[in-house]
Image (cartoon, rainbow, N blue to C red; front, side):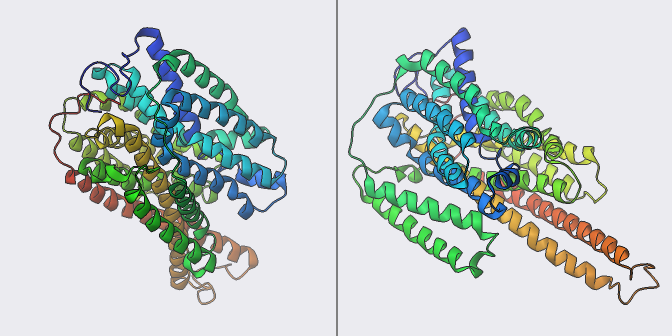
Length: 511
């Protein structure tokens, strides 16, 4: 950010205009959309894929974990990779590799091959996320750069919503391979347009040695931490020796990584951005907000499918209204950042999230489609105000040469927060459901209340009673989560005020 002139500071190129600007912006936005989509599109299709490949759903979860681990490894490496190969060249190469790996995923006939190609797909997709934002900023005029970031933020918010919808629809109606094949068209279009319009806007290339030790420590930390988060709920967390060892390995690797990168002359991850108070506070706020937001994205379809009888497709439709206001308000947020203190915009966004969570804290087991869809619709007005503004504020005080690194690390922390939020939300929900069920059964014991509950002693009566108790236990757990989320998001809203007051409104964002 912090532009001084109408050119892209990192490269000295003037902004694009007219049709070229529109086409390049669309290509970069769809590149980000494609990669973020693949973080959720396989989730609802995983049982179908597991059945087709002849493995259990427990084994099938590696399809999701493998992609998440690989993506999380390469996102923070984006700044270093950009310096070595150039941003445009790296972006185009990653898109091509992503398409090839997507095809190989769809063609996989065994779990082993699918997991392998999902890892490679994640490696290729990771740098596309931060590069799409930095390249978008570089092609817009300085007074429109916040609009560029708003477009990027919009795709980041909407893609996880469309993932379950597309994944559910495809697995219900077509071969699961099409979950990956749909990337072919998008990828070819994105890569071709981006290279055509931007190959002559390459950033400076700096050759330097490879920080092998830092790279290996990063791989070990992310792999162990992501595996712990993804498998923790399934293995009952720290009652499992495997999870304990993963936690120990992740902790040691993280500590060693920090010490090594702080003392290395040419680190693979530049941790100096942590010294910038505005970046640190913005990134912390973004991680907290997005972890809670993504927990909500995971929980709502689970509740609708498991207890409300929705199909995967209809559960997706119930959550999709969030995308309406997200699309409409993202450009407005981009414009307001040039006029209003960004901390106020973030606070507004989190208050809107709190209103949405509060509405769902009062749902009951008889809730209809609109009762679910309306709070999701409201949620859409708050997410861009948080995501776009915090992303913009985070790198607003970084020097041009650190923007790619700062953006990569910010996206890395956001992705890790998503994984933690999803896992902790699911764990809390399951434990709260068990606790609520035990309390309900204790209140009404069918063996001691035959007069009050006639017919309950029969097999069918007991089954009906059990289903009723299960539904109420899940509903209470869902209400409890959203009540807690309402309080937490308001607490998180206070964190952004730890950032220094901007010297002026965020008038522009520059690379």
